Image (cartoon, rainbow, N blue to C red; front, top):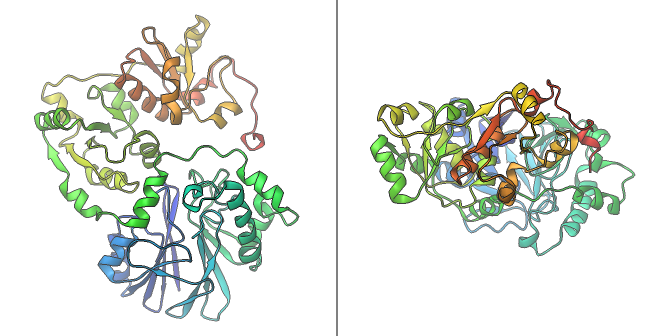
Length: 468
């Protein structure tokens, strides 16, 4: 028996490859499926099942394409009812995989179709739980994402989740391994651990939502408290996962490599968004006017989903050379399939063609210390929890996630300064502001990490885990 967790840091997502005696099951695959097919081929094995824990909101799964390519059936738990051909398993249904079995544990609450899969080894012993978004390490799945579909309140869903955890998961032996669908960084929970593999016993001790003496009322209150609004792209991803989507290989093949003139013409003729995914320092040194920065080496897909509100928006890419296909693929992972093309040869192609380009002004944290004494306006684009934990005195919170709601607060004509934690998000914010006519924005290099090393006055530090 082999179990491999295939973890994608950008999405904080874990897919699973399970092999026994020449038969393979894939759980919650990514949209690009060839790596699973290649792995099975190299193992001399056949993909027999594709298991889905629920209709994912934060990424587009590869279940449909993988089934088309391999003939393996897609398995959901009860209440799923997708529009494509799939097997809706019954609670307790058992699937044989080589010398092991996977048992369906219907665990509604995160969503009504949410299902875990319990792996029993060759001796019939409970070995591992693939817990989807029902149970994370340190947290449980947020119960507010399926309200519209289920016509239920988040409190009602939380109550159902409480019962699922107590009757299906906490009854398992302490040594059962837990393989969750997500780790820290996912918006599907609020307190996820950085660890990606744990055990039932550990979670009973450390996970606030599994306290033995916890009442249902306490659970509902604690699980629903402090939930930030879900990213805007979540409903669209659920729809794609439930109704199907185009093969990502076709999307990649249709994206055109464009020279500077063709790129400029495409931008003018299609009203496409120019998305620059290079490093923030490279973007600051030079970028196409009006382009938006979201760096491929940061939390790329979640920020794309949070900030590009129209998933049908045509996109033209400026990428590091050699990373064009990767960028298109990672956009498609969260349902952004309208990549028209990319600048062939990268930004140097634009510069070498003599095209106009813009730059982003910046200052160091030490320079900001002098400027703050002169009363310049500064804005903090970190998340509300980061801001509450510690921030520059008298500086307002204007989180990147909700930048559109704060546009009126930024000076239209005078210079102003923005920072995040380390410099990635502030450049995203600056690019959006510049694209909307705020050319007087100045980035603070190094963000709050650098600011803390200066004499700039900040509020007293409060541990984030104590904040409500």
